Image: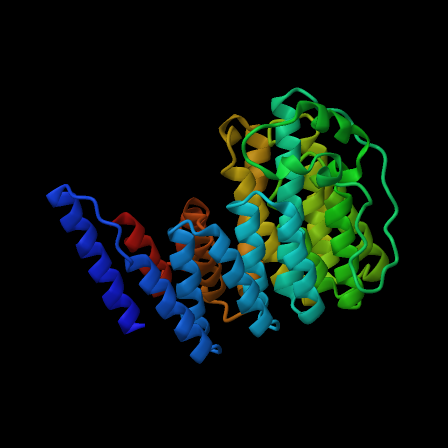
Length: 389
C-alpha cells in the first residue's frame, strides 16, 4: 500500500510537470498502479482494506470495465461479506443506472448471506428506489395513472419470487441515464412495478427467512417509511402492518408501526389530521399503560411528534392541536426516561441519536424541553452549550 501511494504521488507530480511545461507525454503511471494493485490483491486476497482501496481507485479513475472485473473477483473471494454485495449493487444502481446487474448482485448475495438483516433491508431499499425512479420519470412525462393489477409471486426455491414484468422487460434501455423512451414508460401502465409488488415480494421472502420476527418487520417498516414521496409506499407500509397484525398482534413493534401508520402521509393542517391524531394518541395511551411497551413506544411517539411539530407548514397548525402535541411530547419524554435511570439519560441518548441521523433541529427541541425537566443533567447542558457555540 505504501508502494502504491508512492506511485500515485509520482504520477501526480509527473502530471503537474507536463501541464507546466506544456508537453505531450503518454506515461505508464496508471498502468503501473493497476499492476501493483493486481499483484497485491493476488498475494493478499484476504485484505479487504486493499481491495476497497483498489475499487475506489478504479471508480475515481472511471475505469468501469476494470471495476466490473474487480467487483466480480472480490465477491467470489469473499461471498459471505454482505457489505461487498451491497457495495457492488449500489455501484451498478447509482453509477451505471443498471437495475438488472444491481438486482443480480443482491440476489446472489442473499444465497450466501441468508441471515443478514442488512442485506435483506438493502435489497428492499434498492427495489424501492427503483420504483421511485420509474414513478418519477412517469410524473415528469405526465403519465401518472392508478395501478391496480398485481402479478402473483412464484414459488422458485432458489430465487426470491418477483413479479414477472419489470421495466427492463418493457425496455432494457431504461437502465441508461440518457434518453427516456416515452412509449416504454407508457407500456408500464399494466406492469406491477409501480404498485410496489417487488419490495413487497422481498419483504415476504425476508419474513420467511426470519420466521416472521416482529423486530425485523419493524426495520422494514422504518426503511420503507423514508420513501414518503413514492406513490405506492402507503400500500407497502399497510402490507407490512397487516403482516405484523396477523403474525404478532400483541408485539410492541406492531403497536409502534400502527401508531405511525395512523399519521403517515397526513399534513398537520389537513382535514383528516385531527381525527387520525386522536386515534393515534388513543392507541399510544393504551400501549404506554403496559409497562413492557413504555420505552419503545415512547421513543417512536417522540420521533413522530417531533417530525410533526417541525414539518413544513406546521406553524399554520391549529393552536389546539399544537397544545395537544406539546403536552403529549412532554408526557412521552417522562415515560421514556422512567424506563431508564430517571435523570434524563434516555433523553440524552435519543438526542444524540437524532443528531447522528442528521436531525439536529429535532435534537435541539428535545434537549431544550429536557433541560426544563432535568436542569441538573450535565450532558443535556453540554449538548445545549455545544449548539449555542
